[in-house]
Image 1: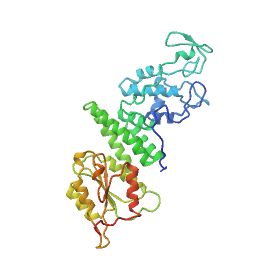
Image 2: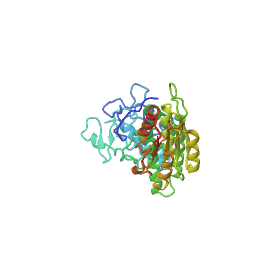
Image 3: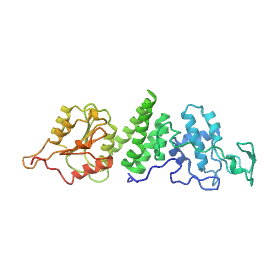
Image 4: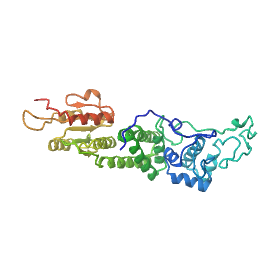
Length: 370
């Protein structure tokens, strides 16, 4: 898997690409457009075949290249179909938003006068040609229906696919972002922001978008587990496993699944116990496994059990005089920094948690009482 590449937040119009416009710039391929919008390339091609929603011009003969104005048109098509508009009607409306090359009819490249939105006839060489531009793209995030803000284009595409309940597109987008950017970047900059946006939308619209959250969560979990069970190159690291569990009463498991995947990428052994692990069961598992670390996830203060965390941190293993204890990682917004006392740390972010665990396999901990 390619290493994660750091990049700041970007909206759909700030992603570095080759998208061009009427000035003759190259534009981007159908596949790149599909990834950006969160649809399959087959969907884009079917829109062209059925409804005539095609690039304004083709370059190099048969090859399609989509300019920024073309992408804006497809973006509008996505927005309208997501809102429930029939595809044929959505295509007609979307094609009115594209700014055609000066003096050409969309899709033909022919120099033909056209009428501007104000009723003015324009054509090659007319001073008013630029004034005929139709409205451009909407504010960032409007097309997905989710409160995304400034995010990666892949995040915006994933949101659109989730709102459409398009499972194949969700799977393809998740596979691609994991391959291209690595687990940490995929989780922190694509998966988690989209999941949070769905959760916020659900919280402000009553029971709407529950199905979107359930479908997206299932696909994200599936993608993370594929990473977790894929053997990394090289020899796996030997040593006691890392135990991952949600605190009693806590049901949010996806962040722990992301951590399990991140540790698996480094060849570190894990044991995932999942949601709402009872205190007695957690204590039994810790004593039986003798883990190097115990990661406890708490989403809210009501499930952050500081007494349980201290008890786990005091559990020692091994012979007298050479006893070790697990490092307890307090993960999630439910924990307070003040709760990270002896034997516990509160890493901020997935990468910091992975690094803290990896450090243990080269620097084993001693039990604090020895």
